[in-house]
Structures are given as C-alpha cells and as structure tokens.
Image (cartoon, rainbow, N blue to C red; front, top):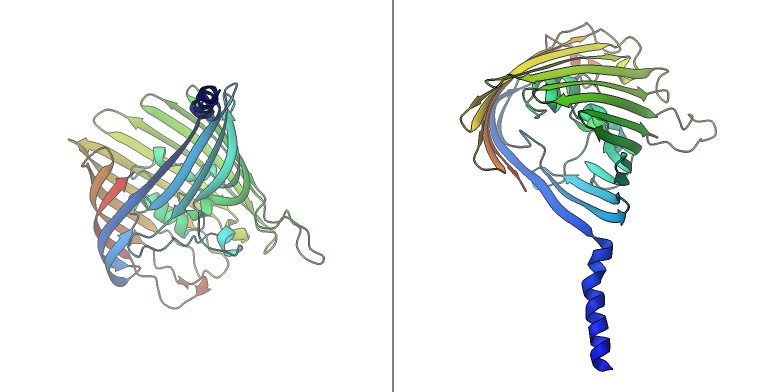
Length: 359
C-alpha cells in the first residue's frame, strides 16, 4: 500500500508541469557609453545609459491553456546603468500617477493564439515601433528619435509612446501585421465640476508589410488634450526600407497636428538613412529635419536638424560595441522650459563610445 502511495505521489509530481506548460524568462539590456562634447550648448563629459537601447530588466512568460490559446505577461523596468537607479519616465502618463518607477517600461497580461494577441496594462503604442524605417534602429542617438521626442510627438521610440490603462491587439498574418491600441489615459471616473473621464483618451493603429528585403508601414495615433485644451493631437507616419544587399536604405515622413493640444502647433518630420555592412559590423548614417510651426510660447517657427554617423560591431550574438557622433542644430529656437526666452538654444555635438549587452 505504501509503495502505491509513493508511486502515485511521484506520478503527480512528474505530470503537474505537463498540464501547466508554463515558461518564465528573465531578460534585459545593459547599455553604457562614454560621451563628451556639447549638449544643447553646454559642455558635457561622463557615462550615459542606453545609447543603442535603453537599459532594462524584464520578466516575461506564457502558459499553454490548450486549443492553441496561451496566457502571457510582461513586466519590464528601465534603469540607468550609470547610477543603478530606476529610469524615471517623462511622459504625462507617469507624471499623473503616484508610486515608484517599477515596471514603467511595460506591464501587461493577455491572451494570444492564432488570432494574434490581446493584452491589458501599460503598453507600447504602435508608434513606438519604427526601427524598420530608421538607419539607427530607433537608438536614443537616432536623429528621428531625438527630434520626434524634442517636438512632443507620440510616434517616437520614447516614453511618449508608452500608454497607461490600455488594451492592445497585435496580429501577424504572413507578410502583413496589424496593431491597435486604446488607452483610457489616467482619468477613468467623472468628477463633479471637473473634466470628463474621456478627455485624456488615446488611440492608435498601424498596418505593416514585411516581405524579404522590403518593409513598408503606416501608423496613426491620436491623443486627447481636452482637459488642458480643446484640441486632439493627431499624428501619422509612413515609412519604408529596402535591403539591397550591399546597403539598406531607410526613411520615413510624419506629421503631428495640434501637438500637445496647442491649436496650430504643427510638426512635420522627415528622415532618411543608410546601413552599410562592414565585416561583422555596420556603418549607420542618418539625417532628420523637422518643420516646427510657431505656436504657444514659441517666438518663431524653426527647422531643427539632426545628423548621426555611427559604427556598430558585433562582438558576439549578444554583445555589441559602438562609436559615433551626433549633431543637433536647433535652428536658433528661443524657448526654454516651455517659456519664451531671449537666449537661443545651443547646438548639440556629442561623441560617444559604448557597449550594449543583451541577456
């Protein structure tokens, strides 16, 4: 009898994982660089975090529910490797919520199957994913990344494209992928005498085609600012890239209308670049220019420009070394901290050398 009980217990221990079939993975990025030069006209030298990709620590997992359905989750926290502290997000979503910065890069749970994936939580909007059309692959030193973030756009590989309280759909069908997001913002209940709970809603969609050397995509996003203004920020982007073998040409054009809810504050941004393979490395060259209309506290319109040249070298499958130079010309903008200023913004001229490790 005792032998039978032991056998049943062992069988139970062996068979338990078969039913759950769960998998949890710890992953992350450790990226640090040494920079020196001028940052917006001010001398700078020191160690920075996230030159090619933001340093982060994440947990992701999935459980097989049967019939092709899986439960999935992601918890991801950004950190500054130069200080060891959590990376403070700068989007309005984070400013409106109390608490620590834990898992502010991503935090969601969802279901996926042959239909795609549906998830709930803090998630990337479709406008975060524009690396296919950027010769710097959406690195923080990319001209597209620098100028889109500077101009207040949400189609950008930065915190403005991470949205709280959101539901997303992502699906890939052969060469075509679809994505959509709806965010309730930070206000989910009406308050007497206050703004409506829908006044800070956000939504976006994307449609992409990826087949062999050709990649083409379109993105649309909208952000309501009716709690501070009576305008909705509307944006769209068209991007493409083609791998000719000896080089990859990439570029995009995007527009933002009534940016930050400010009427007639419009931004047009275009960028183009090339990736040239050299042995186990790549040379990346990109140029971007924005047309920023005069609005709000701005004393004049401006056409800021940015240029980056970099070399990335694969030291292994997970480790990449890089060196580069970035210049940003703010076209004599006279806005400081969102307020009119008599001083013109200084240019950025930065040299850097760094190391990126993925685990």
